[in-house]
Each structure stands twice: as structure tokens, then as C-alpha cells.
Picture 1 (cartoon, rainbow, N blue to C red):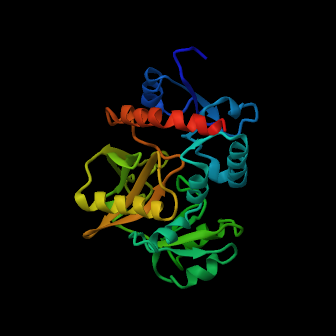
Picture 2: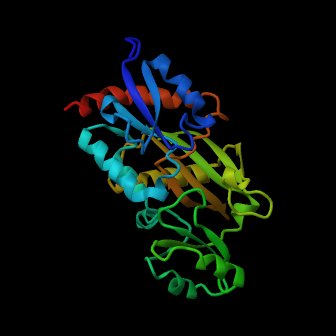
Picture 3: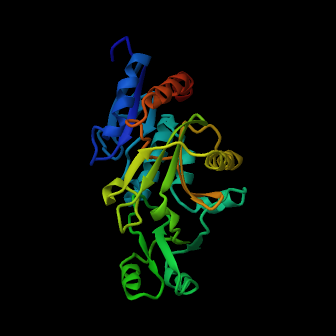
Length: 300
């Protein structure tokens, strides 16, 4: 490594995006002037020498939920090697199962009402929602993977549910029409400080806001209610013993005069850097401030 670089930072990704996504390009450009050599690394590539890095920043590991046990084992391996992670590995483990929503709700965070179905109990749980429009998703998932939406009891929905593996735990939530009508907000925070936001909308006739399902995202400024709710969610994370997030994306929806948390993305969220000039530089600066202490901790 050249003397101009003080730190080597692995940016963990997946095989589908070996050089990261276009959205991370501004971050790759912002790090070298700060003395940080960023290197994309596929998280489950056995050839990667993780011990050779000062830290690992998790970015586009967008298949981790399909290989959850392997992902947790990878975190264990990095811990054993003494390689610091951003966000830290304990937080990543906690955030990898969406049952964290229930924990946040106990700390006063307003969330979409959620029922949890243990493996093998989804159909029993759904019977209590007969006739209601619901969304079903695995507690470990992403990108609308193995997600079904429809009216409980309707033939099409029941057929979709029948295709879901019985071995997973699931979340059952009422469908919130505001997601389709008004959109879903994503508020981005770096080192606990608000950076920027986007409003995501699904394609016509759909409810999924992800790009791969035809959704779109535009730069937008949330109101004070959304900002306050997002900050309560982050305070809830800290109250649960996970203070000091390097990055966080708070996803939620306005319902009347309330902002309801849908998900708290602390593992591999798209950060919408490309559409917000200055956001990558802000993120890079706080990474540069964190790395010296992390590098020292990793050598102990």
C-alpha cells in the first residue's frame, strides 16, 4: 500500500456487485484524499485476507439474508481475527432479524403493528387476520424476498403463502396504503447526525418500493414529525445497548400525523449518495475520524 494511505478499508459486497453499486461510487472517490484505501471485497469469498484490513465497512452484502447462518459465521470469524466492523458486529447480528421491531416498540418507537409467527405457525397466525389486507415477510429478509401481500382468505394470497418455506419465522403486518399512495421515506444518518433523505414510491399497481421491482426514489426533505420519529428510533437503538452507529437508514411512512417505522437498516442499506452532493464527503469524513481508533483496537 502506498505511504499516502494510512488505512486499508474493506468494503464488503456480494458476488452480484463485486465492484459495489453505482450509488457507492462517490464514497469510493471521497475516501482516498482522506488517506483511506478502499477495497471492495466479496463477503463470502474464502480468498479474502480480512486480517489485512484496518476495518470492514459493510456495503452491498445484498444476499446475506439468503445465507444467514454463513453471514453470522463470517461475523464470528472477523471478531476472532480482531477486525473491527462498521457498523459493529453485535449491532449487525441484532439488526439482521426484523424481530428487533418488537424491541424498539417497547422503547416507545412507533412502528407498523406487527405479529410474529415462529417457524411452522404462519398459517395459524394468519387465521386471526381473516379478510384483512396484510404483508407477510420473513423475519430475516431484504429486497421484498419471499414477501407476500394480499387479503387473507383470498385464493391468490393463499396460493402465495403456500409457496413460503415453513422453516422460517415471519412478520405479519397490515398493509399500509400510504406506502403506495404517498411513498416510503428513507432518512439517512451518519454518526447519529441527519444527512439527507429520499422519498421512495412503488411502480403503478405495486407496493414494493425497491428499484429491482420498478420502484423509484427522489431527493426530498422530511418534515419535523418524520425527523423526530427517526431520531426516537435511533435513541431506541442506543437504549438497547447499540450506541455509536456509523450509518443508519430509517425507513418509515406517514400515517395521519404520525411517522411509523417500517424498518431500521443498519447492515447494508443503499445510502442514496449519488443523488445528494456532499453526502459521500460527510460519510467519508466521519469514517476517517473513526478509523484510527478502530485500527488501534484491532491490533490489541
